[in-house]
Length: 249
Image 1 (tube, rainbow, N blue to C red):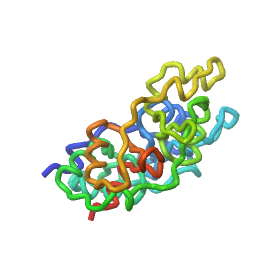
Image 2: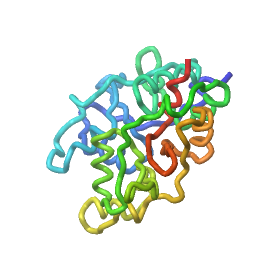
Image 3: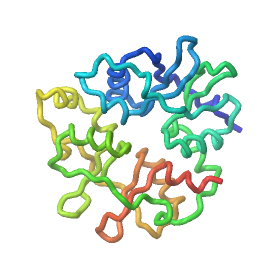
């Protein structure tokens, strides 16, 4: 049976004395949602996530990571992927640090990498309606890209349904922002891109009365982190990997 060691990848690691702007750049421009932080002895002290990093502006370039560090999701190389997934679910993180007995970081495991394995060998009971998040944070096609970073900062989510006149017209994710070469110039004020320019269509959706297992399969099949939930044409919720894992015993 595969363990955490089989899914380890190299993850960003910074020191407590590093500037927050360094973490901000990594989290804004790379696929990771969390960066891990070590002390002078290279022992893990915790992590910084994207919401913390985006709160720091250029005028606070001298702010260090100390004071922003949160308790990290950690595991051992021998842990099962289910064990690591439960820890990510409980901490609501997208990654977990794999450490040795001295708390040195050996690597990391990404939820997106182990999620297909989890759902292939575990039953996910229940309906979408009982696991989805009902209070949906949505974007408008006319929102500028800076607004999406504000939504990420305020909500902690990294993908948003796009709604126009109460109808779902697309979805935009942090991945879309990273892949767009125009985003950096937009954020620095040299260009103007809107959600309409970058959002994805058509949108993969699910209904409230469908099983969570189907939502899990769609998340894997389309390699997305969140699925809008539609009742008819009305957006009533959203379900993500963490919601699916809430049924993991």
